[in-house]
Amino acid sequence: MNRVKITIMLLLSISLFACGWGRSVTPVPEHLSAGAKQIQKGLKWYQKGCYDRALEHFLRAHELYSASDVVDGVAMSLNNLGSIHQRMGDCDSALLYFDEAYRIYLHLGQEGEAAKTLSNKAAALVAMGNLDEAEDVLDKAADMALNAKDRKVWITILNNKGVLCTKQKKYQEAEKLLIDCLKETEQYDSSQSASVNSALGNLMLETDRFEKAASFFAKALECDQRIGFYKGMADDLFYMGLAFSRAGKEKKAIERWKRSAKVYALLGCSNDVNNTIKYLQELSLKHNVDISLTESFIQRWLSGEAYENPCHD
View 1 (tube, rainbow, N blue to C red):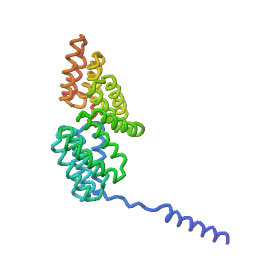
View 2: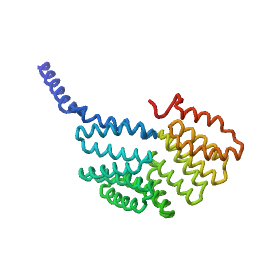
View 3: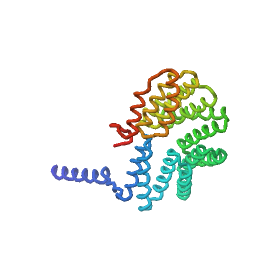
């Protein structure tokens, strides 16, 4: 009798394990997951500032999502392609990608994602100098983000509104928006915190508060170093140098520009290198600072002779 009871108990426990704890998960078919894998690869490069590498993967993702008719994936890849083209200076193409992504997200009823795309579009419009249109787009994005109760998108919109207000010379409004935004981001989102600190640094430059500008760019640099955003680091160092130069601390500016130019060179950003070197050479001649070693490294790296390139596997 005891043996029968034991057998029944064992059978019950196996049944419970199989039915209650071991629910099988149906794997996602490869043709549906392939696009997501390319998005992840693209984001890895995008977050380093390696935009050529990211572009390839986002294009691959768009093709894979289109072939499998994964509509929200198509919209995501288009939004990412828009961001890449904006970062690479092709804002006209960026607007085309953002508009198409926005239409798809609206069709899907995904208001939060639609608001994010509008915010990205507004940033491109600001970069193009179309400030009135950017303001209209941001207002629309803000309404949608509030309806969707998407706090992260709302913070991104606030940041972009702060940048816009700076461009519009509404400095007090810009500062209030950006300080509020910074309080929301600095504890949990390094990438967003870097962006807000950089925006505040640019605001301080615009309003001739150069020491504060350098401080904000230094904070942005810390955040970008934490997440490995190389292009952001180079930009932070460049603008920190600009702030020090305008504050009369030209030797500090030289030191920042040397570092900035080297990061730009390793990334292959020749235009940014040339712009930085122009400032660097002028001040180094003035203060009799030898920058020949820095220039030799830069020339070598730009010619493709770097052993360790952030944008190579």
